[in-house]
View (cartoon, rainbow, N blue to C red):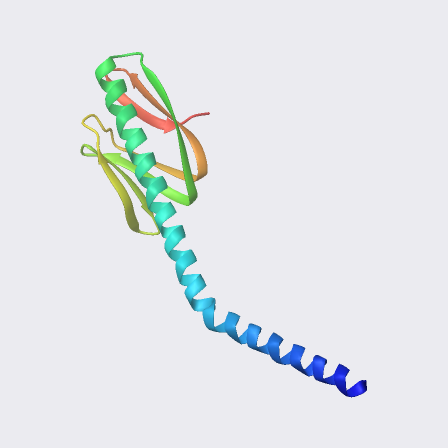
Length: 133
């Protein structure tokens, strides 16, 4: 009876060690897949933010003075949104994630951490972009 219990314990330890070895072998693959997924999410959120802002800027510009649009911007981390020279860019950690054309894009720079409401206004003959209060 004792010999049977000892054999079961040893078999369990061998199977558990094999399972741990399997996990250790697959950890780099799992981390790589996770990193690629997070990178894809960053690019998708940046493209969406740049597109939404570029559309709002052009819409307010062509609609005339007094028009206001609010844009909800969501990011995974702190990122810069830069406007000027007819483009809206989203930059994170020194790399450009997205760029969209906006004919009326004024010169601006916003830092967004996670989410923010961005106000796009046509006042005083020009478009102004800033974080909503």
